[in-house]
Length: 369
Ligand code: IPM
Ligand code: MG
Image 1: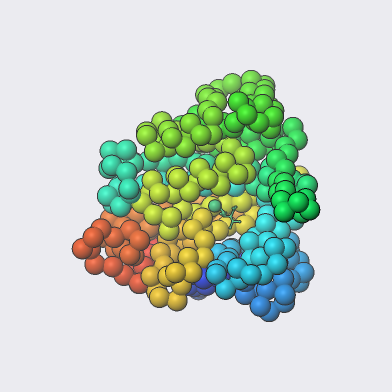
Image 2: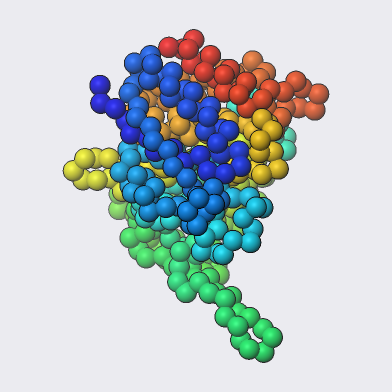
């Protein structure tokens, strides 16, 4: 059996705590002979800065480049607020995305029936919700140059961020969205701000053309990004796949996360282009929630987003579709049984620790095996 090389970057805050629950699942799958994994681990974010003076070392970048997939926890925390901008913890994550060419970020927001009460929205709005945000991840204002703060010398400073998109960047993310829509409800909503931004005008034009040329079987709707945010809290079930740029995708996916009950529920996959020879894609899997320094080290973190991200890894990197489905089913079953970490518990509901939630999901997986 070929072994899958996984590079683990637990990072800061609750990252290592939620990663430990995935490692337990990996060890079990390995021991059961379900799949063979070889894992290595590195440092990213604040912990890498403490060790190497930068948010990720060259050695760890090389390991990430060579791995079949990277599992990423979270980065950042108040401890590193004063670190120089180029070395801030987030720089490690952004470099991984950029250098590995991970342009397609898939963020599925699924509201498990058992959690419909945990959402800040009414049950009927979110019960059964299943949307997929496809966020462009290596372009736009995150990486555009110039990106500067200049002292104007008159007591004023000027800050500049640059939003740039080339045709090919929009084409390839649009294709990913249309392809994925075909495996779902066959609908894509493309969100931009063509009423204010030139990048929005080009985005709209390119997505329209790609649909007309290759995906006329998929229904396409254009929506202004601000309106999309409003629609997401008004009637989110109107959407199937939402494709959008890097910054709007960042914001809209946080909105979508809360529809599911908690930021602790949202996994993500970041994929590169398919290698024509090996048919493989570079890939990184991470929970959307971030390092949550306020609850780090208190056993309060919800490991579901991290475990579901590993599920996406089984699906998209290793083709272990049955096991990816099992991971999703195990999560759903555990939630249906009423197991809750604090973030998804109703007011007087009993709560479990990070480890207990991880163990409950592993127990379900054993039942499904
Ligand atoms: C996300 C995060 C990151 C982003 C941060 C940590 C740089 O918010 O993945 O959504 O803005 O992309
Ligand atoms: Mg974000």
